[in-house]
Image (cartoon, rainbow, N blue to C red; front, side, top):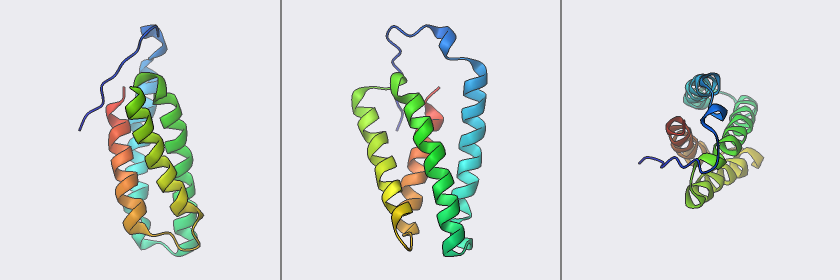
Length: 111
């Protein structure tokens, strides 16, 4: 699955290399964080999930002008589902992990 990047009216200068490099690094770190969730205590899971959701939410907001309306809805829905798991007393990793991995993969395509 790939995202179509649309940048109507946004100058190319706004898409700086540093931002793409930062996103690439963040996507890599997020993937590593999600991969360790099943080895953590519930408190550790809450901590890591909170960090992942915060970074992903920020990156989705940054990506919003670069993707179609439908793609924004998909990204927002995935973030919402991830946030629901972060609010649970005991996060369901079987729900959180695939959504996080999917969203991280989608964000990796937005450049």
